[in-house]
Length: 130
Image 1: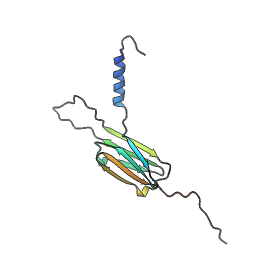
Image 2: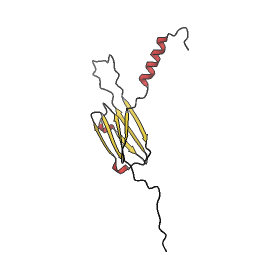
Image 3: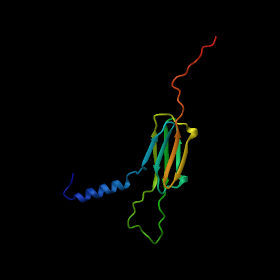
Image 4: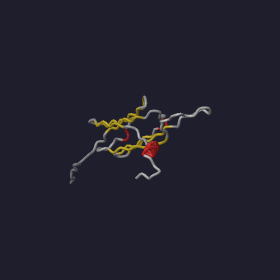
C-alpha cells in the first residue's frame, strides 16, 4: 500500500533491490537416456576447483563459488551486474545412481555430469535347499 510520502517509483526501487540480492542459481538441463542421466549447468566465471559434486542413492548435489571480481584501487564500477558468492543446487532422480561411475567435465562455462543408472533389482528368486 502506498503512503502519501511514497511514489510508485519507490516501489520499483525496492523491487530492484530485492532482485539484486536474490539468490541466483545456474540454469540446468537434465537428459534421461536409457542407461544414464546427463546433467548440464551453466557456470560462467566459476573456477573448476570450486565445484563440488556429491551423490547419494538418488540425489545429486552440486555446489560452487563464483569469486568477486578484483577491482583496482583507482577504479570504481559505474555498473556491475556480476553475481558472486556460493550456491548449491540439488536434483532427485527416479532411479538410483551408480555413484562409482559418475563423470564430470567442465568446458566453456558448462558443467556436464554423466550419471549411470544403478541396476535395481525389484525381485529376487531364492531357491530352497534340502
